[in-house]
Length: 159
Image 1: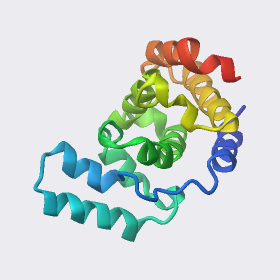
Image 2: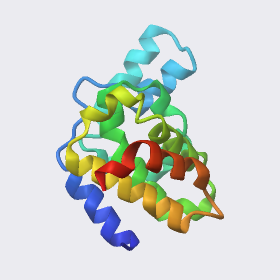
Image 3: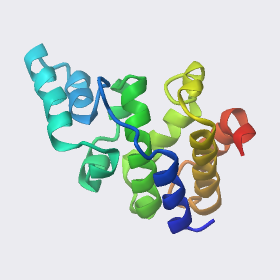
């Protein structure tokens, strides 16, 4: 599978996934930096004002907020994961911290192995394909051992 095919698969599998009441990028960033409640709420508002769909998130945010997923809830992670995977496929040779952070989240089952059931079968298969892509093409640029571990220990059954 080439880059374009994988991106298309991600877009199809995660089409219609919305943030709803989840924790988005701006809110997660403010939680991470332990800002006051009023600023955390402002981050929540910004997430909803700036991005209706995960496809609206610009690459500059995905590159800059490499740890945001660790501070999101399940709804936020499910919403942002396809954006990060798409970003990584396009830019995996550029050395962003977001690349390995995403792989580490997937290695942990996406915020815990018990959270895997949040994803549809199609989404799980897409995540497995993404990890295969990283293992195959990312050796010089990504933590391939973590991608292999994520694939073999959690996501491979969904291929």
